[in-house]
Image (tube, rainbow over all chains, first blue to last red; front, side, top):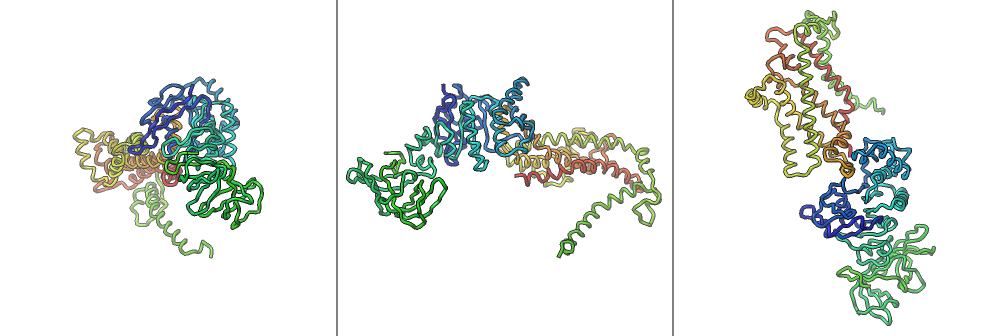
Length: 355
Length: 277
């Protein structure tokens, strides 16, 4: 059974259409991430599922029940906000048990649920503290605790890690993953950080200006992006995308860049000749070799494990990830090897994948 | 050069001292007179400390003037007006701060614009309306008048504070199961205590001190409040200055107590909207 189903969901704010017919089906226990640039409608989608925004058209089903007109508290969901949204005047225990007290559950049950959630999240020592006496990571955990005690059908996360510093973010990311593996509660997770989405989610929904660009597992999106947008959005450092004309050459083909240089692709056979395409190749699939397309090094960014080299082929900027430590300096000329690499071809007008 | 000798700093302190003297001297003078026997009040040599201190003036206002009655009237009027004004302003301020509806901003501006008219312009129409309704010389006249002119300021002050409370906290409460009113009572109001205290103190002091409406709308000692009562103690030919000042001291005391007690909240509340991001 699907835990959450969104069918042809549309949402407008006055004359502005924010969501144009969204269809997603999420199975029980699945972790789905909604990613996209700001303004793509991912947060609106989450808020509509939560019931904080009304639906303009289409339907939302939670646990098989249509909830378009059901109040948020009766949707069997729990939400974690970006700013944590803890109640500043209540202790950690009061924050976490607030929803249960509103439901007038018996005190013994409230205490039991509170204790279990506090143990899972390591908050037992902090139950009597106020939110202002907690660190950012602890506050984030309390916000999750508030969701866990309700034992909902769906967890909704709205960019929960954006307010944390980089190191804590990585740590909390692992905690969220562990939590999900333990509780197996269906989760919808909004983020603008594609790394977060890749590492956490079973499936990712890439959104762009109110549409779903692509829906699939993290590796599907990485290996076979269906549109130029997804190709550029998923993966870090992002994919090299270059416009050019693809021509047949011998058994393979070659790409002519507008500024002149020609990139030979002997392993890539194409049907048509002289097609205008957007050609994509990931920085980690390029390599520096003795032979290949000459490029001028622009910037060298070592990160320790690998080095990101930004260079130019003609006027086209290209990034390469180099794993071994090579003496490459700004201003050098290096040769880039395209042969044998995974490449992506997109129709330049429709943005859709063609090969 | 050290700061202490900076002439500008010296000038600033001098100006402040002058201002404080301007504000405080009448109080000192009032307290001083309240303890002086009558012949000393009119003596040609000025003295701050009474030469023959006496409590006779205080004795007098309890013996010949129904001072406790006036005090009770003032208390009733100030407390009821404050409570009514606070309830109405809280709801209005929350509505202006959180809900989106047609005419919201014009309505909010209309509420504010009532502050542009001097109080005195309202007195004659209000008197006529109240006399038609038979409300002259009742507490109701004062309740209505005071609530009417404290609501605009309180509404805007509370709206400003509510604006600083993050929406997400309220949304979290809605998901947790609160109705709109529960959100207000359980989440917003506890967080707004500094603003609520500041607003109440403002209402209380304003209603307690108000003279013009109290004088015009009350005609008997049964409902007359302290400022109006003090006013009629000033006779045409002869004024009991000692008694008047003793009553003045007793009238000022509650205000000073309220102010000192809630001072911290008052300053917090007045600046909260401006600085709390």
